[in-house]
Image 1 (cartoon, rainbow, N blue to C red):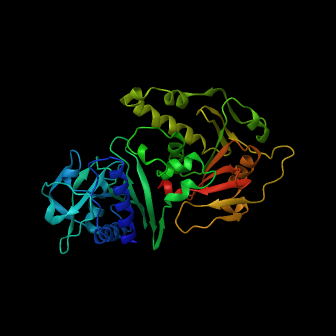
Image 2 (cartoon, rainbow, N blue to C red; image 1 turned 90 degrees about the vertical axis):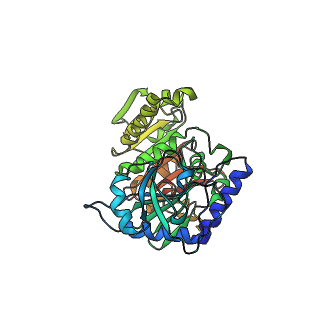
Length: 385
């Protein structure tokens, strides 16, 4: 897959340059990509003091980054070296810089694919800031690697390009966001719907909630319903064990703050706490209910079939992965009672969406598709790693 990944990153750089972006990352050649994947894969299977390594490799020269931490003697790009240094760089946002060993002195950056026959790759140090479209390889868990690219220094956001799990390679389908009735959450996760927004600081709260829901590892269900309406109550058993009155509006208030306030330290600290707090509610048995304005209405709610509504029997299932085919399945086959309840709720409340996290890491977004005339289940765990 290395030549395929090289071609994808070359295309991303060309598109970013066409839109006027400067100071773009250098694209690694296929040999460099292969060497990074091999070293990261075998490192992922090792353990250091009982812990599996979690590292992020970024293909960038020191001069392409900001305030890098430089090793006096660069480390070899091999599993043993990566495993030993992993405890120091496991926190989010820290990347191990990878570059050609014979070219670690400052020079003018290029943005084409570079080939250095006979020159080895080295780990030159660490950095928090990498250039736009930078090739990033992240070790998510043993045998599970994620290829990403950076959308711009201002946003700090990444777009997943491919997932490598054992000998299985899943390349994210950039065209998935153009499918009829594609939910806004999916297009934001894909990151390809609006390349012009790569360098802005816009929020997508549901993306953050989805990542946090998946992160707590207990499984969960979040129902997002229209603000100001009560129709959703027809699909919820009463009494609701943990109804919230008045609606809890901390996250909603944070999202209404002006852009300049969002850039402040206080807001930056408060926002992830608010997201994690709501995501934590989904770990309770039942469903958490959130308005489209991000106000919490309830959690631990039991979903019931709306009076007069038929029981849902099939949903369309897709993954935003190249080569994946749509299929019709019984919603219970997607993961059990939680998935069946979510599908039934969206079938009965067609202006709502349901986010379902499984304990095994799978993540599904249920939304009504007018184009198909049925509930569509979007499997998006490959975009959340």
